[in-house]
Length: 416
Ligand SMILES: Nc1ncnc2c1ncn2[C@@H]1O[C@H](COP(=O)(O)OP(=O)(O)OP(=O)(O)O)[C@@H](O)[C@H]1O
Image (cartoon, rainbow, N blue to C red; front, side):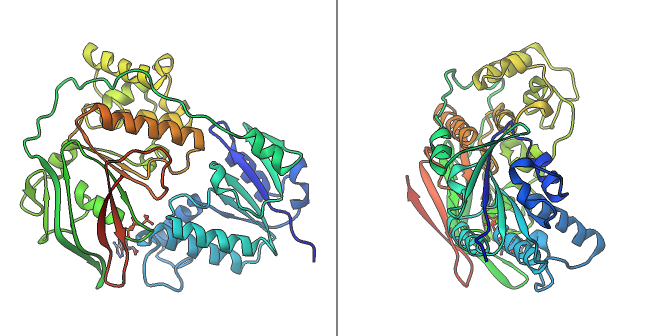
């Protein structure tokens, strides 16, 4: 049997990935990939996981979770991807379309998925869409770049790598100060003392002790399933876990009558799913101002001072000329910059960025990281950056790392 071909398609924020994927899966003719015509392809992507999650929940059925007692929704990203891959392989497709397969995975899970995909590639064609160069599988035989709807091909592997180097931009202007600075009287914003959490009798966090003080810049890392999301949702008030444990938020012990609203006032929060699901028609200016009103999109008339402040942020982001553009017309990378400015505009005591670079191409991720470093340096807000990737050039002061074990994850603190 001949070794199948394996394709890598590098995408950036102009790429019409969805259009090409639909064509591939529907067997439409694509000149550059004509060997796949009349072959059966299946999709491995975050959106497929979400679709199955929806199906399983809505119809109370098990598709990907046949071999598990746990709902797909509560599985870690690594567990979800494993379940999807095994389900797809059972159907023996001729080819698999992979969209950013390593996003949201920690280093060890990425390595194990990479090995698995390389093994699969010996007998099945892989078509990998990748927004990060580092992710491209070593078994790739043919390289492309997707510019809008155009597939650009390269005569050789070397020609591809030579053409796709990149450089990193920086922001020149200063971070705009808040209109009404928020006074936080407690020096310590978050304190976990020997906190343990279990789900259905299985311990996930084991004796976690961690304290975040005003103005500190932290990165929270840990492999898939180690409990990062669990910890974050205890801080943002989205989880009741932590009641009865020694967990203090902004000077108040969790479970002693704090209101989620009060917590939200003190925390600027950003995770890409907020952006990717956002469907309203609001201008960039209004999106940033809405951060002052704790809404997404603006439903009151902005004041001149608010407009001026939004203008300063947009200048900093290099998006001032687009201030009247609708948010939905921005590229993915631009949207994330705007949503981070929105989370930051009040200068809340604590800013949480949850996997903020997932799905961004290298250039956009570098730009995003540069913005976060700048915010950390020029503001009094404490920053908590959650990411699996060792983000090149991110400069946190401290790293809190979750180390999984049979009795749940323990935490260690390292400096940067
Ligand atoms: N509501 C729940 N019910 C049962 N198990 C849960 C629930 N929430 C989380 N878990 C389990 O707890 C563990 C930690 O999950 P969590 O989502 O906090 O990890 P994570 O580090 O954020 O992972 P990822 O990086 O993949 O998102 C996982 O094994 C997960 O399956």
